[in-house]
Image 1: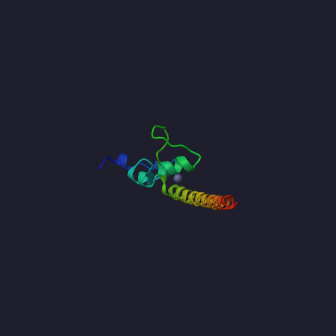
Image 2: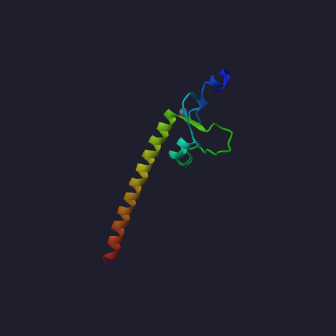
Image 3: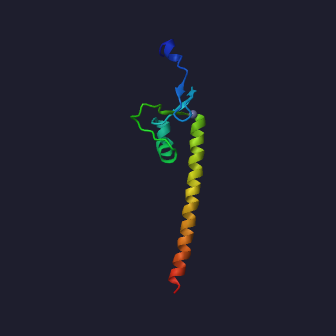
Length: 99
Ligand SMILES: [Zn+2]
């Protein structure tokens, strides 16, 4: 175990809500990588995280939940859009083949 001073860290700063939290998820840690957090944040949120930037690489559980919700919603919308496009293409090719 480390010294008492070290044990008194009040927490980690969350990259997304900028608040201190005792329990955080390291974006580049095992857990974060398993959850594909880098892709979910960089790809679908208006922020970009890079391993070399000077900002925190941790997010709190509340923000993790929000990221997951946001990602799920976007995936659903994208899938619906794709399905609609395929359907439209289907109609179109059907119409085109009927000559
Ligand atoms: Zn947060």
